[in-house]
Length: 398
Image (cartoon, rainbow, N blue to C red; front, side, top):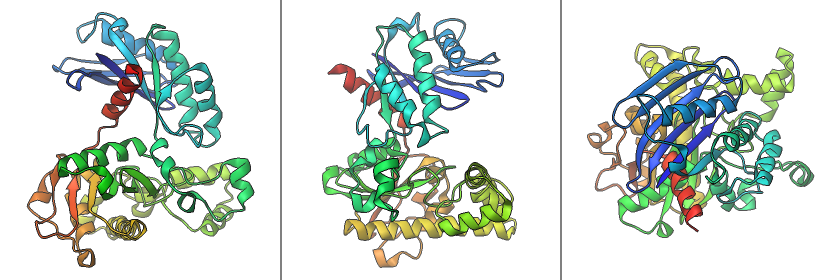
């Protein structure tokens, strides 16, 4: 059984085709620059590839190209789209409407589009991609939507409510939603399996660290708190995002620059974080290199990130009344050995001790805490596409 997984952005269409008999990736690629030209990059499991400039006025043309590269030419992997059992779509914002995976009916797609005010960069493109997919993919192939926010719907009100007047929650749905839920759900389950324990018996702090980062308290397999909030802007400092900032600092800076609300949002989302503080780059690899060469602002960014992660670990251990394991995932979490070591250093209060030799490993499932460490520390590679495919398969199997 083959499942196509789609992750659509405003100008991109990432995809993976998986064979669910052994959960292997048959092919993957990206149709990007939608609306501003077009480019396709496509690779197969056996190394064949397609790279070409295209014309993608809309997501529909991108889907047509996706179908073309999968079914025709030197890098094709299937004879026709009839070989695909279903398409699973990643959706960023499901609000309080969607707390689980469901079929992408016309009504559901409209509801996703209606939520665009809560995720303007993501939900409208998701909806456009879903409509485009329905045009291009055979009608008998079911479409399934998996929501990033669904995993966090188990948070209690004390964790997701803000101190704004309650009417803002009732009228405008202003609350913490959390993101990266698909990743946190996948890695926390994978960690429980690696530890040989029932996830219901574990208290886990899951650190998804990348260009966008979020930290989640997973108690008994359920999200009870998370660092990202109403939008993915909240939490720890990120590639180009501020992370947590005093709201009065936001209004103060906006007034000083003469920014509109949208301009201020762009300033905090696209020009801040690693990039804004360091003046060097939004990429942690560049920050690490610059810090090693003596750039003080780059070192400051690294110190800020580590310090903020430590604070979340401490607060979530308190919130859960304990912590059995800490996991690192995402581009930084899986590969930045220096960040992992710095986070786990000077944490004697928790009885955390890292195994420096094990911590040299990159991008692999591995325990990096020393045997005497009271809290286990792991690196767990994430695989959101596989979880979406599993969710899709489970739903259509019913």
